[in-house]
Length: 336
Image (cartoon, one colour):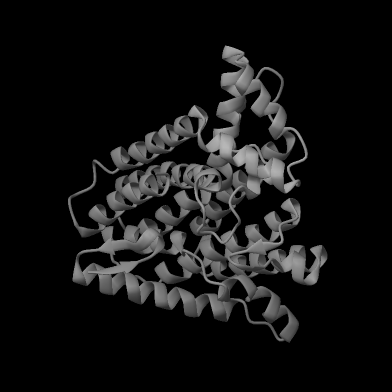
């Protein structure tokens, strides 16, 4: 039994373990090949985050979903490379938008080379992903295009904020469905689709991926407040310092508006202040860690993870299904 993929997922079946390990190794080679350029500087910038590592969460889901069909089908590894390249490209762009200095424990591309290089490198990765997609057929291109549209729409909605009268929590969950859930869903869809799995299985795994993707991001929201060492390489409270309204903060504001408690209102005012000040930032973290809003965000995470688990019910019992269920458990465990 070996830990593979994110969160130390334990694959208990030797044949499945061998397939997943071989698949992820092939994806890693594919990522390095896809990020090569005749221009050495472009290669360096494009491989910056590839070489920094990462969970390879999406390629893992491709490999596990492929187990429900012909797991050796030729399109499986390339489709996993496509989803990871797309994910990496969004990270380059996100870091520019967030003015982030660190990603995966190393200097972000924008901190190292400037915003223009970071944005263009993200575009380069999108182009390479599209090139690979072209060989996977028009249906794969359509699926990826629809997911990418949802991803960008989610980012725009996050930037614009909720419309007047819209519940901020509902708005945020819709944003996550686009920004994170869409690409995780495509990872599962591609694995099943490329393996030739039955269309019913493809649909089940797509629904699972959508829900798991949202749970995954909600767990990150909780970790940003609750953990002492953030596994993404970001400093705890990074989103808080940057004024990004993650779920624990939204739950706090919702409670403050509903109950009008002085302590809740005071904490909201603290969050609205300049949290680049280390003392204020530390105090905000301390108070949020002890606040019921954090526990509510944990419950929300568990709910989405349980919804993902429930979506798997129609699938036949097998080692891959067990591994997908364990991913739901791992997400919940991350959130505490």
